Image (cartoon, rainbow, N blue to C red; front, side, top):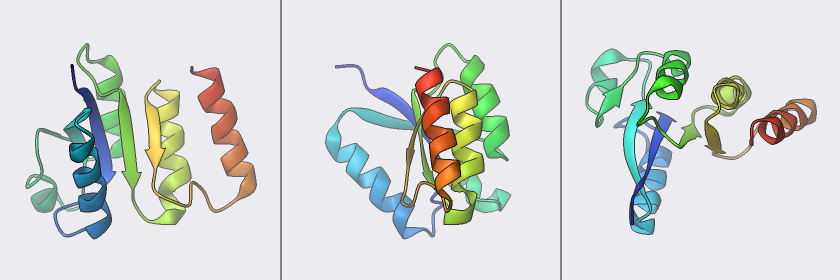
Length: 120
């Protein structure tokens, strides 16, 4: 079985939530972490595996253009940032799995739902 490549935004080396998501995905045996923007701090970001990006927007653009780009991204950042990050990846055509809550406003969640449906 070929592993689905995924990326992560947030969840740097000091974060518990990112670690929990990485462990769960590893247990599934279906996905491999290959890209990420794990921290706003470059030194922490470089401690993480594979393709590291300085910003989530740069990551979404670059991974969408790669023939071997990620199939989905896991977002594990502070709640108030979820909407913009998820929107950016959906607009790039990359599926999103987001730590809860998806957004802090209903209208934002509905907008993401529409965008995801359009990009299927």
